[in-house]
Image (cartoon, rainbow, N blue to C red; front, side):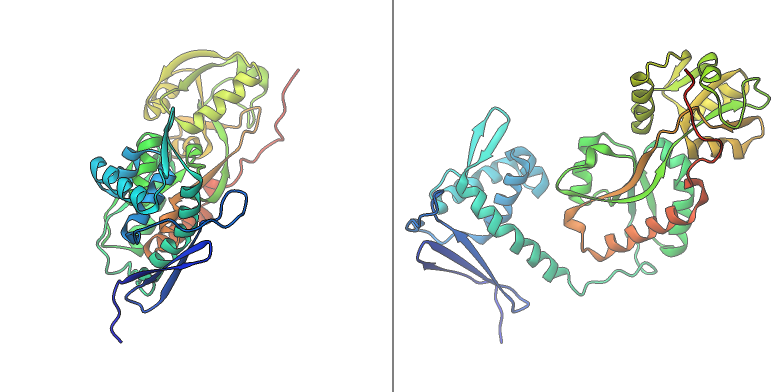
Amino acid sequence: MRHTAASTARCRTGRAAVCWQVCSGRIFDITIDTTSPTGDPRPLTTKKTPDLNLLPIAVALYDQLSVSRAARQLGMSQPAVSKALRRLRDAFEDPLFVRSSRGIVPTPRAHTIVAAARVHLEQLQEELVRGEGFDPDASTRPITLAVSDVAEMAFFPAILQHLRIQAPRCPVSTVSVPDEQLARGLESGDIDLAAGYFPALALRNFRQRRLSRHGFACLMRAGHPLWKPRLTVSAFLAAEHIVVHRGSRSQEVLERFIERRKMRRKIAVYTPHVLSVPFMVMESSFVATLPFAVVTRFAAITSRVVAALPPFDIQYDLKLHWHRRFDKEPRSLWLREQLASVFKDHRWLAPPTGPAPFLES
């Protein structure tokens, strides 16, 4: 039997159904409800058969609420998306999207069309990629991970070692980009995964998987007079501090906590460079409070610095993030499992040990 990418439309009372026949021979029946907002049937007035190639554009416009952002997501020019929107409006005889102060907003008809089309578009994508496998031994496709500079120093060496064994021919690269650029990269597939603390990716189009809980520790020079396994609040406030202040998402967690508690530290140095911190610490009496894995890595490299626990425990989740487009994609599935196993098997992600945290009055 010869299968084509044909499309047909047929009318029913109060409904229009669009059927797709794809190369797999499977029929996808997309039913678009044309009832009125009150639930009463209304006659179908669409005079033209909708071009099903336009439905992904309708979904992108619905998700992005911007013609320019939808164009970037689809890899199209903005004029081409605008032209497609005009064709959609003509086919469905409805504005579908109207201008607002924040971009564009969907009409009730657009809500109905996108709700009907989305599930079948995703099902079609799954059908087309079903059976495709991923061979890590043979693949030469680069792996691109988004991590912060702190995470790259603390976690990436173990990730890299693991991936070089499991996918020896795949080069591995890291990127550190602003949140908006990161979201676009994950959506387009230019970035495979984001690993670490990325609260801005808690969006509906992104998936996440918790890897571990993480916290903070204090880096001090060996022989520091204030050192104890866990610092008291008085010792913490008596010390002079180094603060890393360049766009570190995890560092923002610490700074917000200290601000809420109205803890007045003596800040001696602000720096955007975390790699300079151990050199300043070992030559002074400064204290730096950094993510636990960073402090323990510095302390493992040289005996001239030591780790101590702060007088509080602040924890945040380390997660994997990816775009929903790649939920079932074999390569993405494989890569997510590899990174999850790395985080699971390494002890530097264990919660800090020591006396229970306390806050002095």
